Length: 183
Image (cartoon, rainbow, N blue to C red; front, side, top):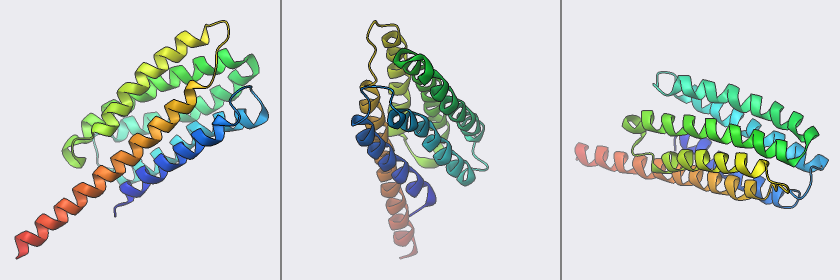
């Protein structure tokens, strides 16, 4: 399997594991929940850096580099926002989700020719923008909650796993065609 398959699969499984861990610590801004909040965008930084190494000539590379910086800034921002409370954390996560979702959607559009249809990435990017906008609204609520982040990250992880499965299916299909052409 390709390195991109592994990156997507591991990224997806780590996001799902993060959602499970955060589900036990999301009620307040404890040390555990803040560490998890800061760690989540750092997971994105590592995965995106690994992905950019695979796509040096890709038209999506500039956006991936941008997304790496954005996610690093989000990690710092979430750590600082935790000082001000759940509303500030939710607002910071919301801004990050909107901007990174738009970037993910655009990267998926640009990679369609090279990697196939990209429906999981397109869907995840669009849903990230929508979810981020709702987090911005929820942040202003009298009693904001971080519970929605559990669903967001679990769904995002699922989309990465689906994208990995799509890549695996496409690679197998291409191998089968190559073998048929040789026969």
